[in-house]
Image (cartoon, rainbow, N blue to C red; front, side, top):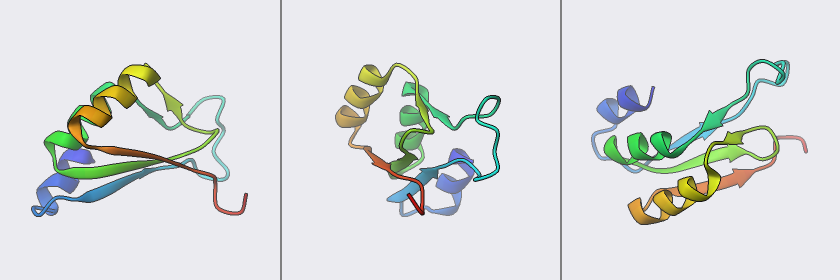
Length: 83
Protein backbone atom coordinates (compact mmCIF):
# COMPACT_ATOMS: atom_id res chain seq x y z
CA UNK A 1 0.00 0.00 0.00
CA UNK A 2 2.82 2.41 0.86
CA UNK A 3 4.55 1.79 -2.48
CA UNK A 4 1.30 2.12 -4.42
CA UNK A 5 0.39 5.38 -2.70
CA UNK A 6 3.86 6.77 -3.35
CA UNK A 7 3.49 5.86 -7.01
CA UNK A 8 0.09 7.56 -7.26
CA UNK A 9 1.08 10.67 -5.27
CA UNK A 10 4.16 11.80 -7.17
CA UNK A 11 4.32 15.16 -5.35
CA UNK A 12 4.83 13.38 -2.03
CA UNK A 13 3.74 14.75 1.30
CA UNK A 14 0.94 12.23 1.80
CA UNK A 15 -0.07 10.77 5.19
CA UNK A 16 -0.59 7.13 6.17
CA UNK A 17 -3.32 6.54 8.76
CA UNK A 18 -3.19 3.28 10.75
CA UNK A 19 -6.31 2.34 12.69
CA UNK A 20 -8.23 -0.77 13.55
CA UNK A 21 -11.74 -1.53 12.42
CA UNK A 22 -14.19 -0.97 15.31
CA UNK A 23 -15.25 -4.64 15.04
CA UNK A 24 -11.70 -5.94 14.62
CA UNK A 25 -10.56 -8.58 17.12
CA UNK A 26 -7.32 -7.04 18.35
CA UNK A 27 -6.28 -10.34 19.89
CA UNK A 28 -5.41 -11.54 16.40
CA UNK A 29 -5.02 -8.56 14.10
CA UNK A 30 -3.45 -5.39 15.47
CA UNK A 31 -2.26 -2.43 13.37
CA UNK A 32 1.54 -2.43 13.63
CA UNK A 33 4.38 -0.18 12.47
CA UNK A 34 8.12 -0.47 12.89
CA UNK A 35 11.37 1.07 11.64
CA UNK A 36 10.89 -0.64 8.26
CA UNK A 37 7.54 1.16 7.93
CA UNK A 38 9.26 4.50 8.49
CA UNK A 39 11.94 3.67 5.91
CA UNK A 40 9.31 2.77 3.32
CA UNK A 41 7.29 5.88 4.09
CA UNK A 42 10.36 8.03 3.45
CA UNK A 43 11.29 6.10 0.30
CA UNK A 44 7.83 6.60 -1.19
CA UNK A 45 7.36 10.27 -0.25
CA UNK A 46 5.15 10.23 2.83
CA UNK A 47 5.26 13.16 5.24
CA UNK A 48 3.68 11.44 8.25
CA UNK A 49 2.00 8.43 9.77
CA UNK A 50 -0.97 8.78 12.12
CA UNK A 51 -1.52 5.86 14.49
CA UNK A 52 -4.45 5.04 16.69
CA UNK A 53 -3.29 5.38 20.30
CA UNK A 54 -3.71 2.35 22.50
CA UNK A 55 -4.50 0.09 19.55
CA UNK A 56 -1.36 0.22 17.39
CA UNK A 57 1.82 -1.71 18.12
CA UNK A 58 5.03 0.23 17.57
CA UNK A 59 7.86 -2.27 17.11
CA UNK A 60 11.23 -1.07 18.44
CA UNK A 61 9.53 2.18 19.45
CA UNK A 62 12.66 4.11 20.45
CA UNK A 63 14.44 3.20 17.22
CA UNK A 64 11.29 3.90 15.20
CA UNK A 65 10.90 7.40 16.66
CA UNK A 66 14.60 8.21 16.29
CA UNK A 67 14.58 7.07 12.66
CA UNK A 68 11.39 9.02 11.93
CA UNK A 69 13.02 12.15 13.36
CA UNK A 70 16.18 11.60 11.30
CA UNK A 71 14.23 11.02 8.09
CA UNK A 72 11.71 13.81 8.66
CA UNK A 73 8.64 11.57 8.88
CA UNK A 74 6.19 12.76 11.53
CA UNK A 75 4.65 10.13 13.81
CA UNK A 76 1.33 11.30 15.25
CA UNK A 77 -0.80 9.47 17.81
CA UNK A 78 -4.55 10.08 17.83
CA UNK A 79 -7.35 8.50 19.87
CA UNK A 80 -9.99 6.48 18.09
CA UNK A 81 -12.87 8.54 16.70
CA UNK A 82 -15.54 8.73 19.37
CA UNK A 83 -13.10 8.36 22.31
